[in-house]
Image (cartoon, rainbow, N blue to C red; front, side):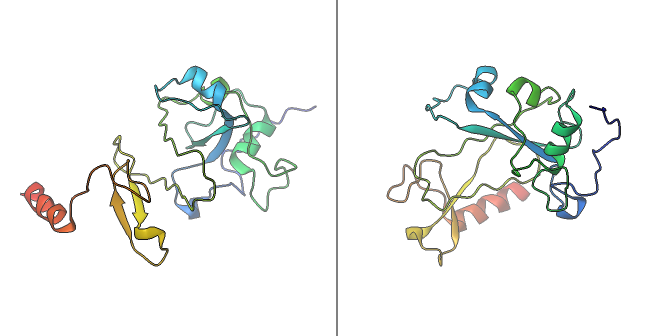
Length: 178
């Protein structure tokens, strides 16, 4: 098979375009077991058969030494105009070492396992670096209620500790601005 040398990093139909204004250029997945073998971050890891890790890349961190098809799938799979996308539209699978061979930093965010009936979302925001994972919930699981910042231990039924009231948060911001 003829090897293609053209650069597809700025392809005509990327998964994430400049118009999306998101910090990603592409994505791939790797097995959870393979990932944990390299990045043992200390948390207990439940045995979930078939569980994968989703990796997002910026244009500088897309893995090296990929075949043309692998790179095309990382950048373009799932794009409706991409004639070369994987046949079933799935995300490119790589082993963890290959998937991270061009990453200088890997941020890991864990999300709860278990009840898949929960209406759970994950938001990724480009911002100043920090090590915080914020959690927001609606009161009484009512979609009509506004979101409120809650602590990590907050569940639908109980609270481990209380988050500051809005007036206290505003008071602290005033002190910090001085």
